[in-house]
Structure formats: structure tokens, C-alpha cells
Amino acid sequence: MLHGKRILLIIAGGIAAYKSLELIRRLREEGASVRGILTRAGTQFVTPLAVSSLTQDRVFTDLFSLTDESEIGHIELSRSADLIVVAPASADIMAKMAAGLADDLATTALLATDKPVLIAPAMNVRMWQHPATQRNLGILRQSDIAIVGPNEGDMACGEFGPGRMAEPQEILKAISGLLDTGEKDRLKDCKVIVTAGPTFEPIDPIRYIANRSSGRQGYALAKAAAARGAKTVLISGPTNLPAPPGVRVVAVETAEEMLKACERELPADIGIFAAAVADWRISNVSSEKIKKTGASGVPSLALTENPDILAGIARHKWRPRLLVGFAAETENVIENGKTKLKRKSADIIIANDVSAKSGVMGGDRNRVHVISGDQVESWDILSKEEVASRLMDKFAQRLQSTRKAAE
Image (tube, rainbow, N blue to C red; front, side, top):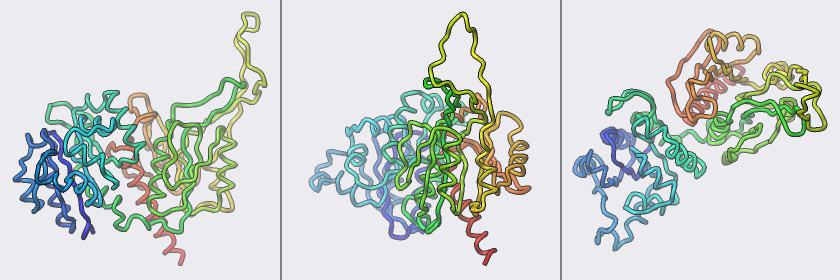
């Protein structure tokens, strides 16, 4: 699957470094060649000899090696690879990457590269959840750094939570996707519509009704569709997210605007309705700012129901071949998702828990339940990027099966 591909693997400090040895073995089994860079901290967990034995190549550790740097080694290492993988990616190396620092061989090679980069974060749960790490993560995402994991579970430090490095098989799958080993053309000649983000329903020229959706899951889905060759249209409510590469973005604010934009983009092969659309809007929107005065008291806001975008598209004469909806629930997640599947006449419902304790709304991680017919697949907590990648593979497979059945 990876025959002839060249991987530069950077192993940073952390107990998860032992998994990198298994990753090397799996990469070699798939036909890839691997060269290793060990950071100074990385050598405290795995030895250069172990890495060299598995890669069947020398291991690089020193930025100021007279032999290597006489040939500008950090440039040669970074340019000769098809992909750079940092596993484990510690909080330290993520911070240096986000800041553009280059104080050792690993970070210098990362700064000098023009090739794709994939990181597999691994650290203590408190370090992962720290605002500085999350800020650095956001910077890396905006720089098109691919991220796999981290997973949730028990840690070597005795704590439990997100921070475990993704398993070697997960990292291998992410590598395969980035290196275009059969993923890129899975949705070739297909059109995919994705809705994302909240809607803003005006009260007056200043105020509006909205929700806490960040749009990250929808944007990740659009990015995954485009990466698989689809002509992708992202119909987005107001967010602060950059447009995914290769995706045409249609900006809207209200539910009515979103519905009209969706209808204009039909026909399509796949419609994914991930936006958190406001259920109601104000029927008596004020043309002027509503003043707060003691005499008038609290203003009365009359609500009217917004159009049901998913159900409306399901009834449309150009209904997408595959219609996917999201069910954002705070209780009875699977049961409510099953009900929504039937009520909206969708093919698949992705149900998730958006209660305050879940951290999904505005966060980087998601736990979804894929509901289709009478079947329910409950996934572990994953990054929204990984959820999007796995979902898009599933949608592509389902679409292919539908086409074959129609032939």
C-alpha cells in the first residue's frame, strides 16, 4: 500500500515513543522506507540502536553533526521524504512548531520542509487540555498540519482522559490518506454538499439568536470530501474558521438563507447536514435597536419555526443519492437519533452528545453514533478530523454500493 514511499519519522520525548517502534515495523511491512530523527528527550525512551535496527538506516540526532551538516543534512532529510511524521508529538515540540522555532535537528527539519506533516500528539491530559496547547493546536491546524489522535484512556502517569497517542494502525491509516494511496479518487466526479456552523437569527440590527456550534466538524467533513476528489461545497453559518483547501464556501447567516443555498447547489451525490440550525426565528424582527427602558419593561419576542432543511431536502425532486443528517442531543442520544432518522427520511443520522459535560460544542473532539436503518455503530472519542475522515470513507463506500445496486 505504501510501496516506495519515504517517511521521515521524528520521535519526540514521551513514554508513547515505544509505539513508534511498532509504527516503523508496520510502515516497513507496507513497503515504505523510514528514516528516523530522535530528539534529545526521545533518546530517553527509545534508543538509536532500536530505531536503526527497525528502519535499517542510520538514525539522526544532532543538528551540528559535521558529517551530516556538511551536506546540509536538515534540508536533505526534510526534502527527500514524501511525508514527515512526528510520533509522539509532545507538548514541547507542538509549541515549537506553532512558534516556528528551530533549535534542534527535528524542529529545523520541520521548518525547512515543503512536504506534508502529520503529528500524533501524546501527553498528560492536563497538558493536552491546557489553553496554551489548545492554542498551539489551532495554529497547527490553520497551517495545514495533519493531526491524528490523541485518544482517551489510562495514562502512564495514572490519570485518565485525552492524551494517549493514537495506535500505530490509526497513524498508518492517516499516513495512507495523506500519501494518496487510493483515498484521493474515492469521490472523484461526485458533488458533496456540507452544511456547518450555527445560524444567526436576528432580533434587531444588533442582537440575534444563535448557539455554541463552532462549525469544526462540518469544516472537517468538507475537507475530507475534497481530499477524496469530490467537488465540495461548504454552506456555512458564521464561524471563525478558514476555508478548507479545495472547498467552495458559501457564507450564510439565517436558516432560510441556508436552505435556499442548499437548494441552489442541487443536484448532488451526497448531502451532509452538520450545521446546528436554529429551530426558531423572531417573527417580529425590529428594524431599529430595541431600547432598554424602565417604562416599556421586557420586550415580547414572538417566535416562529424555521424551515426544516434536512426534511425539506429529503422531499426535494433532486434529493442527494446519500442524505446524512446530524442529531445533536443532550439526553437519550441514540433513541432520539433513531427517531430523527425516520422523521427526516434520511439515509444516515450521526448522533452525538452535545451536553455541557461532553465538550463537543466548540471543542476539537467528538463521539458519534452512526445510525442507519436498525444498525447503530458507536465510536470512541476521536478528534473531529478523524471522525470526518472515517465518516467520509463510510459515505463513499455506501454511495458506491448504492450505485452498483442501481446498475
